[in-house]
Structures are given as C-alpha cells and as structure tokens.
Image (cartoon, rainbow, N blue to C red; front, side, top):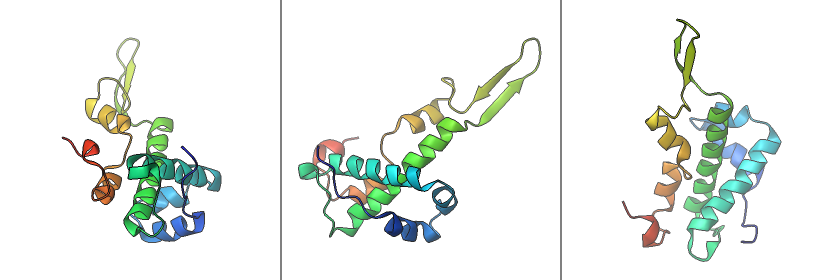
Length: 132
C-alpha cells in the first residue's frame, strides 16, 4: 500500500486542543505524534474501499486523529503498565495490567482499532468489517 494522505501535525494539534486525551497528545514528543499520525492514516486507509483516505471527508480525518491517540495510549500502556496487586510474602510477586491473567486489559491491548475510529468510519466500511 502506498503512503496514504496524512493530516498535518498542526491540524492534529488543533483537534486535540480540547480533547479528553489532550494531555497525552501534548505530552508526547513531536516524532512520536508524527509517527502515530502516519500509522493511523495507514490503519484507517486499510479499512476503506480502495485503501485511500478521502481528504474531503471530515469523519475520515477525525478517525485518523482518534486512531493516532489510540496508538499512543497503547504505547503508553506498554511502557507503563499499571500495578494491579503486589504480594510481599515469601519471594513476592506483582501483577500488572498487561498480565496474561487480566483478560479485560488483554482484549483492550490486543485491539488494533479504536472503537471511536470504527464508529466514525462505520458509513464507509464494507460489510466484512462490521460483523459481530
């Protein structure tokens, strides 16, 4: 697949100005934000007919932004797993949110697409992506 249209970093920064996840977006370095936008554009394009983003479709652009912040959240969870429990008896042990025992977090971590991205793209998707 060729490189799809990618919105500018300044356009994304504007979008995330009042976004719920603005702290994550603004607290991430420019190279990571740019990389997230590029990967998100490829992700979104891969779902669309013809595997191209239509620059004139606002919902497709919003889907790219939402996918980009989803990718950054996923990266943040991988770098900084949440400590769920700690046992200090004997040798001791710790259970983190990315542990194989935590199925809810595993399902979220394994998700490739943001649920919001999928809702934004719903009207553009071919039926094979919409099945249960």
